[in-house]
Image 1 (spheres, rainbow, N blue to C red):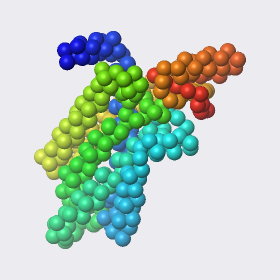
Image 2 (cartoon, one colour):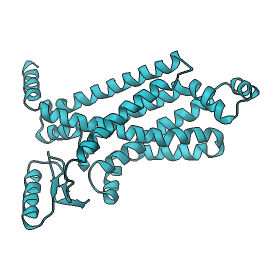
Image 3 (cartoon, one colour):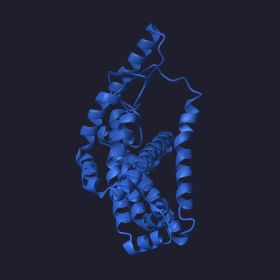
Length: 290
């Protein structure tokens, strides 16, 4: 055990730059997927409380999406949108829809009808009743669904490395390829800690909504603003970099990175194309044009 910890600490000291880059990619991938899922599932869940006849069908469709194996869904998406972060974000968003949608629908539907009726009697229309009464009362249930989706996304995002999506999955896959427990823990431990930290942040946000009903949406708005800031930092930085004309990426392994970089050098020598190799820990001769 002592030798294992020494090897782990040594690996952390030597590859801290790799860990930081992979961790940052994982955070951005998770937050983008969660924000898109909330933007889709929350309005649909609210609409379903007004049109209940369609609720079972739509929630059932979201449940079917979650039953599709993640590897199969990623492989299917690669055929249509190529490799990189795009198929990973689509897959993670699809998996996050069900908890948010179901909890939004359930939370609003379980608000005491007498309270809603009293709000209507005071002159509130459906919109004001939803905004002032139903959503604040249903917020703990809604936040529970968002927290569930967040943990699900962070865990599943490790598979994004299989399609060149980056993240901590690259380190975990490298450890599996090398049968190296230190590398596996090097990627798995930060992913677990990230899920715990994000869950704590969302829990504190939920408590903030309970303490002050009049300003119940302010903590949520603050968290969303910070998440958007983190998400858009990378695109702003990328605006000052040259976008590649050709992307080479693919499966993991010791030989594919060498072959991918050979292709890169050969293409750049023979053409004017700017080539990028996706998945620095492994690539193959699968190409997609941007």
